[in-house]
Length: 292
Image (cartoon, rainbow, N blue to C red; front, side, top):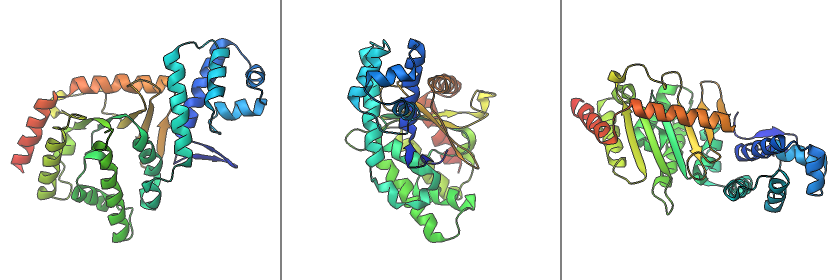
């Protein structure tokens, strides 16, 4: 689903849909009807529909009242829902730097969420994750993708990709855990010198306290990550209201349910266990770099 889902004059965002699905889950578990929920917050049925589908921003008092009505008395859960609502409100009105880069295309919604996320766990078997790419590597990927018509578009795309990396070094740095397949490290994207620099960048980034880099070596054999690549985006402690992002050839896919988030977090953990320890991963990266 690219960017936000437009529904007439209503806009459903990834965070709004995630929040709405949580409220719907709580209402279903409590056995309450939409009409009862609407009466509780002195609203119409249509407002509850809009809230549960993520069509409208939500007020903290409404969330608190509904949670109490649904019997959800876990203070941490209520707090996370209100935090998510606050992030969604900010996201809807934000005019972030990414909006000046139409070249980002389907990545715009992801970059916007990346900007307010607390952590990202990403598995990539075919290429180095964007937050760790050098400009030359990103440029070579864009050229190889063959979707761009003008060199200027490519340069703007690379510029935007590099701008994303500021999140790794700001006042509240993003926690990044990147697992990369060995094949991505050996694929000569841009040639030997570009790859040597890219591999050095991975080793350098791994030294930062908020960055973890792991490699799944060829010797690991079959593992759970072989069928697809994905990223789990967190807005609080890992596992709390996560959303899953997957990029395919034809579209961008967001998986927003608690079940999907849990399944992908479990899969990520299994991939991590198939990979080398961070220290051994960097040793392999350095060995491949020397071979080039």
